[in-house]
Length: 225
Image 1 (tube, rainbow, N blue to C red):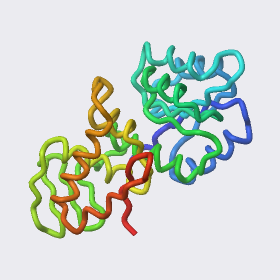
Image 2 (cartoon, one colour):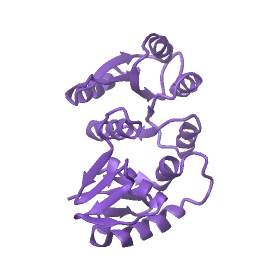
Image 3 (cartoon, one colour):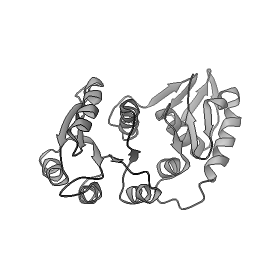
Image 4 (cartoon, rainbow, N blue to C red):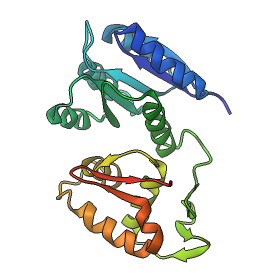
């Protein structure tokens, strides 16, 4: 399969090299830009970018301005990198159509895991119609779930929620992030609806329900030891 192209935009050369090295090791092609203005020039030249990793604090144009401009023309997945961990920044990011939001410093391995989760979700990695982990098998085409070979009957949202957990195996997910991705951006209800659905999902999964770990004060993580 052709290698997917990731666009890394950051004014710190060291940070770009670190991210690039990990992505290349994971079999991606990487192109780079060192400021917001250059980023837009390259974006308009290159038509086959699979995903953009975009720093917020940059000279000439900051990440928000670049993101806003790109979103007028493209729905390419965007991961924002920032030194701040301000909730208002994260909210702004999601309003602008950012797919993920990662605060520096971060683990490059986690960043690559997030990249792969988004590419799976946007069907760019291919062969994602079947997800499997810990004895759980999800067939997205047939909309069916089996656990240790036994069929499990899930509601539509429970199915989507379990698929999202498997796609993001090992990654801590906030309730807001789950809402944005499973219920989509147009959902304005209470994030506690997540807890209700997780509770029902765990009970239907019986013993395997413990693979969905609660992260107190934040959300959940699907983890297979």
